[in-house]
Length: 335
Image (cartoon, rainbow, N blue to C red; front, side, top):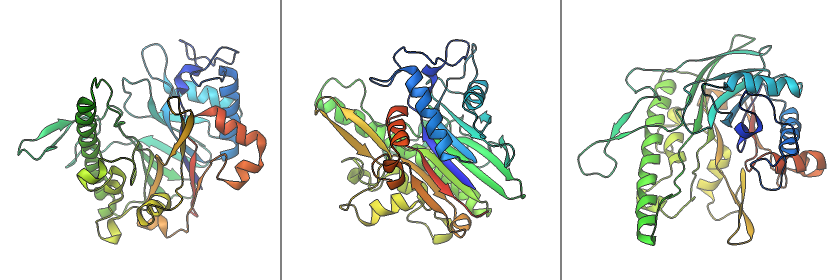
């Protein structure tokens, strides 16, 4: 079984106000790419991935006029994808939903949020962010999507789709303000990861087969504020300081942790106008519970330059560059 995660940049802008595909020559929200080109590129990429389930980050917006699920299913039908059923969890107000697109012939999936000792993800979480002995209230701008999956053979999985808030210091009007906002956003992000980690530990303690996947906007060594707090949000969710039975595993994150100065894997590529060049980063992860790691999983970042097959396939290579500023990440599991 192949499970994937894919952050599709401004997927929502490829549909009109009624949820119809905009396959035309008008500009998309990707620089220098038309809507028809981006849609065509996405069709090529989704077809090439050929996953049984894809956690889509920045899925089309769900609102009063149009709904995420019909738009994704319309997209899948248009390109003849076998992942033709979709679901979402809690809609958010950012125009970037978290959704699952899956093959109903291979698995059954349903939104199954938990609400027990750990607060539900559409609620709030209390934690002392700045060690002043007073708890602050934290919430998710994009609540994680909790999915209960049952495969055709009867295997049960838990998926948690994640899009953790960015740490960018928007609104800063001076270097000091920028630093202050960056630290504040880092605190909030780490609090969200601690909240998520508590849910992860519940599932691991219960012996669940768990996959946490999506865009963390974070990772080991991603910025200078990591030294201030001691660890990244990704390390918190992985449970790097926990006993082995309570750790998740992602080999790409592990590579950065073990060899921070070595050549690093990347899953995203952004253009920086002020520098006139591209910047790459590892932002997208698929974390597996110990039981799933025992199935000899094979992870893959569908990078147009770093993955040999993608690079040697010109149509796929160009589609990956046109479709989004992130690249898909997949894992193959022997279930």
